[in-house]
Length: 243
Image 1 (cartoon, helix red, strand yellow):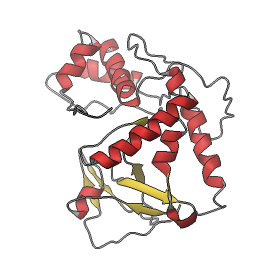
Image 2 (image 1 turned 90 degrees about the vertical axis):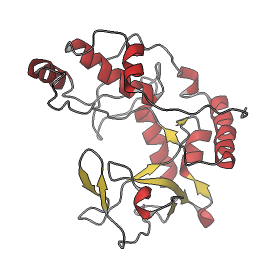
Image 3 (image 1 turned 180 degrees about the horizontal axis):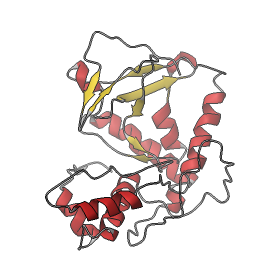
Image 4 (image 1 turned 135 degrees about the vertical axis):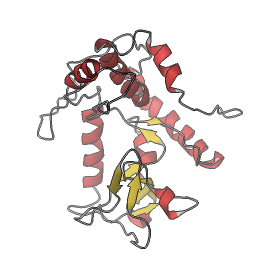
């Protein structure tokens, strides 16, 4: 897709490292705000040297974490989006990208991705993230920067997505097991939609569960997944007053 951007801002994202927001090939990676799709390929972050983790534990974790893993329906959802975009034209697709931020540097995350909305189609009236939500391919994931009106749009889209089934028909809350056989198969893999169906954890939980399982196997964690989540101290907001 083709979008417009300016270069008169700080184009280096700073997180645990530094990454250029605009690549040498003049490309920008976008993270769609407000949704989380089943993982197509995910590897937990490599553990760094730490006084709390022995070199042996760290090496064991990194050996286990040598592949990229996926979730059920991740491949099928990716193909569905590609097929939808192909109806808008071949090659580069005109689009508009926007994000509401306080300062230009707030538009990108620590990984160098621009975070916001992509509008496509006639008059740029189709919001990709809402389309994916309505089709039942993604979970809404509300950001602190979203206002009530935008959250309500997602809730309406989510209701339509639930009616279609897809991830919602396979929504799973069981964190007792992690399927190590679901490995990323590459972009040339033949997708069998009938075989790409199974239990789906909310992706944010899946990513944490994957790292926990390897940390547990490496002897880093002795307790439960719930205890591990409590240690992380992830913040969340209650949607008080919303349906």
